[in-house]
Structures are given as structure tokens and as C-alpha cells.
Image (cartoon, rainbow, N blue to C red; front, side, top):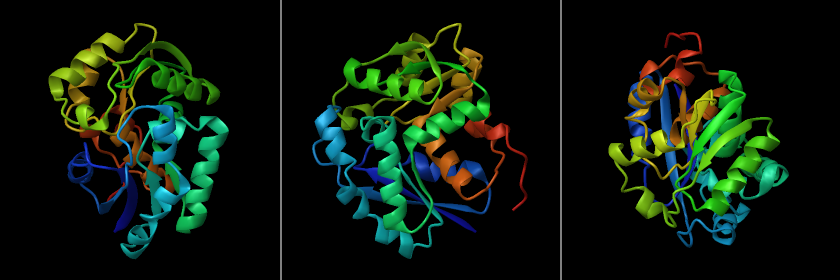
Length: 243
């Protein structure tokens, strides 16, 4: 059994994780600990506070006791708002506190983009434009070319969590660009785990979503490779590993 730990801010789309665990169909356990979200606002100061070392450290002991082998800060905006170097410092501090390999959803996106060989990406963000711009800057710092960027102006994760398949599909269609080799939907508050194959079929390209890449990143940290086509193209590029 491989136990993977996730620090998830508040409560929005955390039910993606048991769904993903089921779709993995392997000896992988996903343990989710909820961190204090503080002020629920897609605003830079609130997001930086949400991702502060103290808030992340508060959930680490529970994951250690659960036997987690790696931990991922399951929040995109609460990591990329620190910038490329600051986000590295965030995960280094988390790894030191947790005593295990650590990462964040922002780096999960970068590693997944590289895994797919997608040099050009489109981004469909739920965030206000200024926050969406910071994610694009983060991706560019990691070497990706952002050919299209669309924000949605939503302030709270609570509102994002109410979106269903119709809203997710509409955002994906609006954000996509013919030149993009992959589409990114960067919000762990967005329910996407059930919709990825349909989105990829509709757009004709890989779709990377926040909770999907977060789990893939945790598997990467533990050197696990699981083939799970129901989770999209990202999970079909790895060789099948029998449990």
C-alpha cells in the first residue's frame, strides 16, 4: 500500500480525492487533511496567508500518523502567488516540517506539462484576472509558453465548488486555443475528476486539472506509476504497474 498525503484548504472539491482513489484501481491510499483556509478570497494577500508555513505545518502531524510517504499542498493559487522561487521555498519548508518529500499543485502542473511534452498551453482559470496572470507568470518561469489565458473573476473557493460539468465544460471551451497542446484548469476547488475524459474528447487534447495533477505529483514523489485512463492522458503515459 502506498499512502499519499494531501493538505487541502477548506472544503470545496475534496470529494474528487476519493473518486480519484477509486479510479486509480491500485494499492494507493489518498489521505486528505483540511487546512485552515482563513479568508476565502482569490486575492493575493489572502492566498499568501492561506499558504503560509504555519497553516501548512498544522496539518502535517496527522498525515505522518496516517503513514503518508509524501505530501502535496493541494492548492494552486496558494502556491504560485509566492512566485517561482517563493513556491520552491514553500515546498522546501513543508518537506522539512513533514520529514518526507513534498510538493504543491503549482509544481504538479509544471511537471505534468513536461511529462506530456506540451510546450504550449492554454489556461482556463476560475480566478480574477490578476491572480490568473500570476499563474501564467509561474508557468512561463517553468518554461511553458502560455498561448491563451482566461479568467472567470470568481472570488471564493466556495463558489467555485458549486460548479458542475456544464460550467467546467464551458470554461474549457472558452479558454482553449488551437495552438495549445494542453489545456490547464488550475483550481483545486473545482470538481473535475469525473469530467476529464469527456473534456479531452471534446477538445481533442490533454486536459490537466488541479486535483488530477496533484495526485499524479504525489505518485511521482513516491516513484509510483499507475495507468488509469479514466483520469485522462496524463495517466496513460505511464507504464502499467501491477498491484
